[in-house]
Image (tube, rainbow, N blue to C red; front, side, top):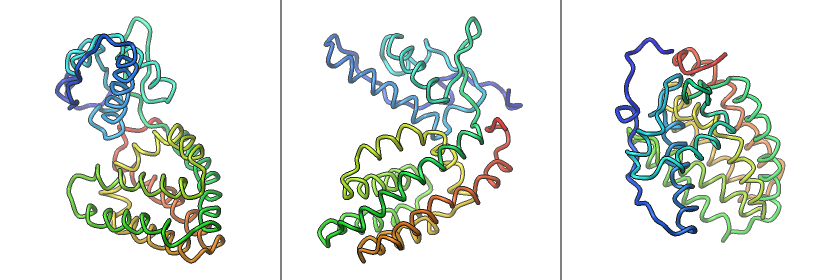
Length: 244
């Protein structure tokens, strides 16, 4: 357990209160919203690695019954974000370096191919939203809260997949990159400056705009290998967050 004093779930977590509903369809939506809210809190570091989380406290803070929280815990355990210990409770998993490296490897294999296809089919009209996202991200990079910056990062990569008619590829990436996202939130202030990411994105988008598959592939590969440089720095600065 981390050496810092233990806090309650309510003290370390800020989540929007969600209105409950009796509708079966709305319950499905509500369950997904509960899952996303807790996942976001873990990825953003508001729920601290190694700490226990209370099903009762989370349900109370979200304004929902315990059932969607329990279901969220099961999904989060499958993703390696929480550990459910019978008779002991549920704990936020520390970040696994091995899982981060494996996820990065798989993401590179998928997204390099997506970038290549995007460059092959690019048009001026299709590329324009990419430039808009890069410029929006550049403006957000100077803000102290990096949440919007990283949301725009995901939006850019998603849009490239959409251009390439490979949204299923992006859904696969979303499923495997949760551990990477935890590192991204830790690295942007200490290991990988925002302007470095924006510069890499400009090179990538320019390669797609130029309809140069080789350049787009190389730019995406270089961009996704940035984490190989930043990960050791992040681990050194946040040792308590990692399970090595």
